[in-house]
Length: 224
Image (cartoon, rainbow, N blue to C red; front, top):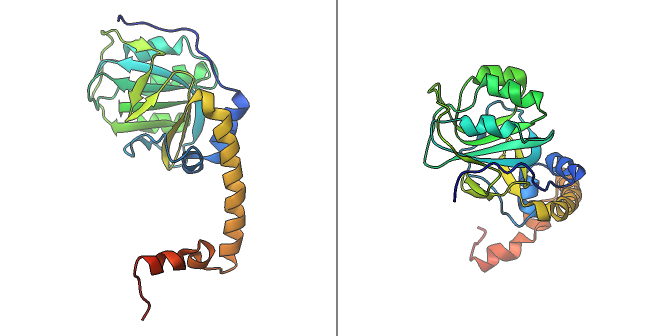
């Protein structure tokens, strides 16, 4: 199969994407059955970085960012770039100039299983990025790849049009066809957690609230 750029993808309801972003990575991960997390080496470049958007996927050669430039053309406002390489790479494939270009086209963030550069400038732009590494090692623009095909990024399958959420806890992927269902489940979980928080705030012990005394007994734990 040859390299290709798929121009048109199906996207989820923008309101669902916003809801998943508000709910956050940890809650969304739990709400969809503790699935969807990218590997924990994917870290934001500044502490309060937070984003949710529709995945435009990119498969690139290591040390070559040609396909990232090509992908910008087919993005819509609210999209995020999800970049992987065909073999392991930590080269700095994304920097300030690409960040400026992305912002001009309404792209709201980047998840890249490789390296980035110009972290200070990207932070000043407030362009949210999650990456495997930071490296000043430059790249070329010589090798073909593909845009909007299924990719594996940091251990997680991402299809074009999936929802990708990032915050200080990491990155979670929500399949497009499940996005509305997961958003509803996450909202219910937040409401339940608020009730739990109130009881714990009032001093109720976790071992009582969660019914853990029976579990301790079952495991043979004895009090002295």
